[in-house]
Every structure is written in structure tokens, then in C-alpha cells.
Image (cartoon, rainbow, N blue to C red; front, side):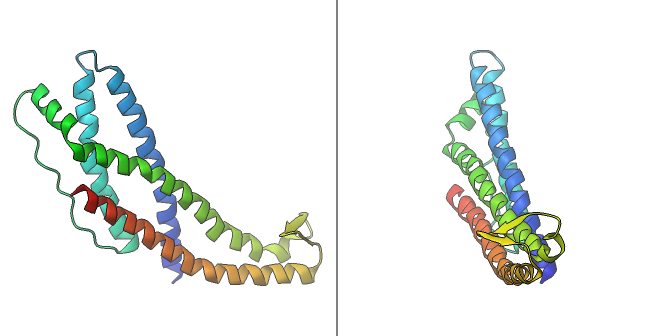
Length: 191
């Protein structure tokens, strides 16, 4: 049970990291390559950036399987067309699935931010509330408009922290399952 709780915390933080990476990668790479599209290297660069979507979606699928034990059907991208670089570029640029995949992957930033805030609320807050009896003498503490300055008040806050920790086990599991469901919906929409 505790290892699952810790694994859920890893997944929440990894969701934030990957969401931030996808957003920054596609924002910078597409802006740069589209701004260079008037030169010879711009369009092939856009093509290579769009080809990364299949790799990132497979990574999301694997990450979801490892951390949440949600089985998701494999995402098979269509084979690249044969022909010149410009024919391949036209095929990649006009493929609607590439742009939809970029949209879904960039949306992961919002989910990642929610995951980061949730990880702080579900993992750090109960821990700090549990440490209140040890810290109330050294730190001026206020918990929900209550000044914690006696042992009795600190024990009440610790009891609230213990209850919040028990609730956090279930909430973290549900949140991780819903994020795993997002990955499932993403792959289903791309097929």
C-alpha cells in the first residue's frame, strides 16, 4: 500500500516533468522550424519534429502501464511514404493525426501542473501536519486561522494530518487512474 502511494507520487511528478517537456519542446521546435520554413531547412525540420509524436505517445503509453497498471492498446503510426524529402514533408504536414497528437501532448502541461499541485497537497501537506508536535516550539505556525502554540493544539493538528494522510492514499490513487485514463483517451482519439 505504501509502495503504491510512493509510486503514485512518482507518477504525478513525472507527469509534470513530461508535460512541461512536451510543451516546451513543441513550442520551441515548431516555432523555430516554421520560422525557418522560407529556407531550405525549415520544412524538413518541421517534418522531423512531427515524427516525434509517435515516440512520445508510445512513451506515455509505457509510462502509464508501468505506474498505473492500465493497459492501453498500442499506437501504430502509419508508415512513412516513399519518395523525395518534399513528398515526405507534404505527407507529414498534411497528416491531421500529427497535429492532433501535438495538441494532446501539449495539453499535458495543464495536467502536469495539476499533478504538481496535487502532489504538494497530497504528499507534503500531510507530512508537515504530522510533524507539527515537533516543530510548533521553533516555528510560528498557523493552520487554518488557528495559532498552534501549545502541545494540545499541535496534537490536534497532527491528528488532522493523520486523517488527511489516510485520505491522501485514496485521492492520489484516483488522480493517477484518471491521468492514466487521459492517456487512454488520447490514444483512442489518435487512432
